[in-house]
Image (tube, rainbow, N blue to C red; front, top):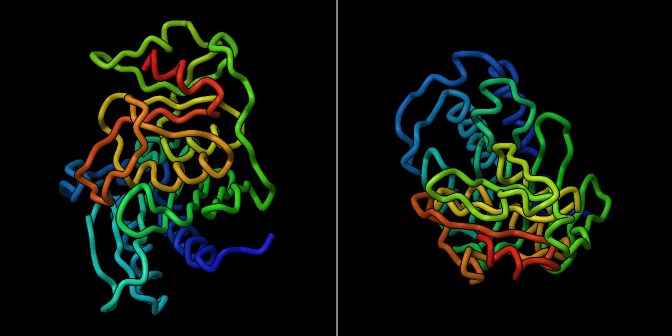
Amino acid sequence: MKHNKFYDLCNDVATSIEQAVSGLIGKPEAGVVLRIGADGTPTEKIDETAENAALQVLERDGRSMRFVSEELGEKTIGKEPEFTFVLDPIDGTFNAVHNIPFYCVPIAIGESNLSDIRYGYVKNLVTGDIYIAERGKGAFLNNEPIHVSSRSELSELSVISYSHRPHAVAISNHIARRVRVFGCAALELCYVASGVFDAFIDMRGMLRVTDIAAGKLIVEEAGGMISDGNGELLSTQFDVKKRVNLVASNGKAHDKLLELA
């Protein structure tokens, strides 16, 4: 397949992050808290290392852009931004710090909010798998097209559901065939996009735009559907302080899932 003009930039950023954090994976120092980040959560050493590596690549690129990231918050690179570069330096920080093999680098390119994402990129830092999507042109895993599943009966569904009290949702009460949680929203959304899982539900009000921006487009371009818990389309601004609820599915059982969310 012919890659979008943003592919090389995203790939260079992800590769730089991968190299920068490789010596920190599973190490106690990776989880040392340095400060509270712009998103209001602790910034650990591995997060800052990853973000700094990304910034070095972006500042060398030469294009002007708005940079939105969990730790730094927001920065304008150049004088007249051509696009917004939305990054979670490491999605699945807890997993990476504790050497649990499920974490990634998710990147989205857009304008100002979740409704205008043009390009999504997610690299699994454990397997090397790369998921990408361009608005209107489909979704791909390692250059091969991917599609959501076709299952529609609740009893057949495999669901990723973040269901912690007091936000427990009914789907987790053995209604679905299987329920899992892996701790890395961007990659979990890619699993829905590729048909491994049928749905992803998180009603805790804790998801940030940096967690879901890339995966949102990838799911949609793979034929799936994404909304908040009320069935409304997501149009949250690229602001790391904002929090959202999310229901993502193959689209076949979305209404049924909303009733249980």
